[in-house]
Length: 148
Image (cartoon, rainbow, N blue to C red; front, top):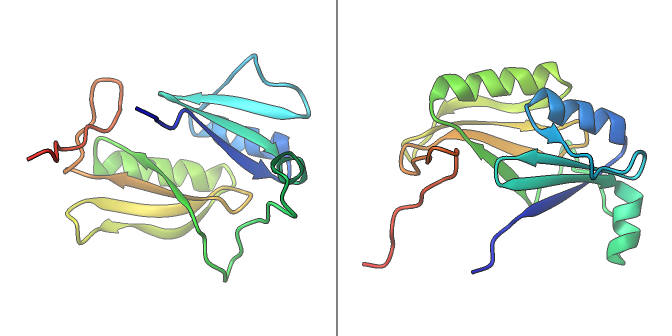
């Protein structure tokens, strides 16, 4: 079964982006190449930070444009946490590290608690506690079985 193992984000400043994600608890890998790419471990997912123009060139597209303040974001990445206090704490940490809270955490219609923050390059992250998606001992989401 295919699964997401690595997410690459195009960034404007590798050092700034690395500092932001390290402040959130992601661990930098020795596989990183100074000035070219930063690999960060976060649970079972690897986050790769790559220069925005380099990513566009590598992918063969005209540009890997930044998220816009007034525009729409086509993708939101998410971090699921064990409880509401953890959501509030991570949003505060992200803001202190240079992120921008776009929506403070609040109770959601689906029964959880979530807020949104962008990293310094405008990538949108949902920080959530979802009681319908319990976390295992390693922090992985355990989706309910839908095979009924």
